[in-house]
Image (cartoon, rainbow, N blue to C red; front, side, top):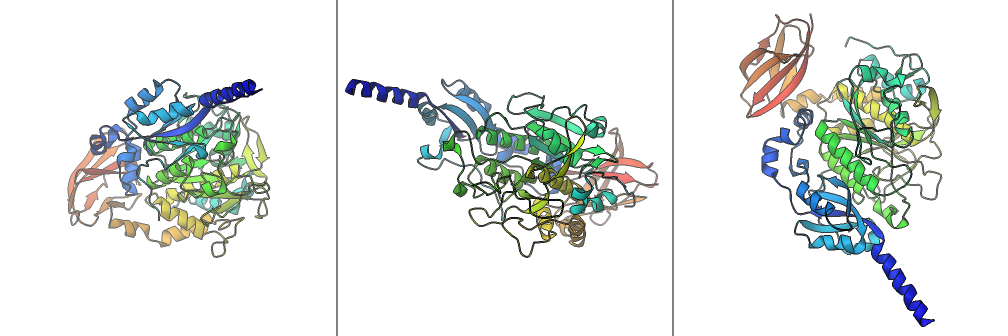
Length: 538
C-alpha cells in the first residue's frame, strides 16, 4: 500500500514537472536604441512617423524592436517555445514546463518572468515604460438594411459632408476574414487599393482566412459597400486585416498576438483599431481573469492597449456578450482606460440583454458608449446582407464612425476625440452600468469638434497650412518659437514643383499657376519635416 502511494506521488510530481505553462519573459534592454530613435525610418514607416508628428506623440524606446538575439536564445533553449513578442513591453510570450521557464531567469538578459497562472507568481515582474493618462461635395448613400444602425448614431450626417473615412487607416483584429477578395461588399476597397495588408499572427502567414467568418462579418460594418442594400460606417477608409484569434481554443497567447498586431499597426501608421474580441475565461481556469484583474492595467491586452493609446492610435473594442451570464462585466482589453469600449443596444435604442456591463473593478465607467448590436445588419462571407447579434458588431459600427469623424479633423489627439464622442452621448450626465454614457450623436460630436477651434489651439504646437483646398495662395502658420522654414511642393509623381524659404512674416506661396489636382507639401524646420496633402481647385 505504502509502495503504491509512493509510486503515485512520484507520478504526480513527474506530471507537474512536465506540465506546460504560459509566461511573459521580460528583457533587460534593447540594442541600437539611440540610433533607431535618431533615424526612426529604420523602425517605423513614414506614415507612422507622420501620424506621431501630427499628434505630438514622441518616438521613444518602446518603438525600437525587441533584440532578436534574445528571442533566438529563448527559441534555442530546451523545452521553451516562443509564441509572440512585444516591443512595447520588451518581452516574449513563451510556453514550457514550470522549471524550464523559471530557469530563464538565469539568463543575463532576462529581468523577470510573469506566469499567466497568477498563483505561480511570487513577485511582480520588471516592467518597461508605463503609459500616461490622465464641403461642398456630398455623398447620398442608400444604406438599405444598415439604415437604422447608421442613423442611430448620425454617421449619415458625416457621410453627407463627404467624411467617409477617406485617408484614414483602420486595422481589424479578428479570428478570420474568408472570401475578402471575392466578396462584392469589399470590391471597391480591393479595386481602389485600400486593402493595405494582411497578416495571421497565429499561423505566421499572410493568408487571413483563419477559423470562421467572424472577421468578414465585423469588417462589413465599417468597410462594406453594396449601395442600395448596405453601407458601412467608413466605406472609403483603408484597411489592414490581422488574425489574432485561434477559435478552437481559448488561451492567453491570443492576448500576446493581439499586442503584436497593435505594435505592427502603430509602425504602419494605423489611426483606428477595431477589436471584436474580448478575453476573460480560458480553457485552463488558472489563466482565467478575475474581476480584480480587470483594472485596466493588469492583463497583457490592457497593457498593450494603454501603450497603443500613448502612441496616438484610437482603439475601439466590443464590451463582450456576458450580460446575461454569471460573470457580467466587460472583459479585457475593454477594461483599459485608453480604449473606447462599445456595448450593444437593439433597434429601438434599448439595452441589449447580452451586452456586458460595468463598472471596472476600480470604478470607471464601462462600456463607454453604445451602438446597435442586436439585429445588426452585416454582410456575410458570400456577399449576402443578413443580421447578427453581439457587441462584436456594435464595435465596428462605432470604429467606422470614429474614422469618419477623425477624417474631418485628423490633427485632433486621440484622447480629445474620445472625450468628444463620450460627451455627445445621451446619458453623458448620468451614465449607467448597462449603457455607460449611452448612444453618441456624431453630428453633435462634429459640431463640438468644430467649435473647439482645434486648428487655432494647435497653431502654437505645429505648422499649419490653410486654406485647403487651395485656389491661388498657400498660407503657412508657424508654431511658437519657429521663425524660418523651407517649403517644398511635389506632384503625385514625386516631381519637385516649388521650393521656397519662408519665415513667420513672409509665409505666403503663390500657386495660381498650378493645375487642378492633388499635391504633397513638405515643411522642414529644425531638422524635422512635416507633410501635408493639398487639393488645388480651379
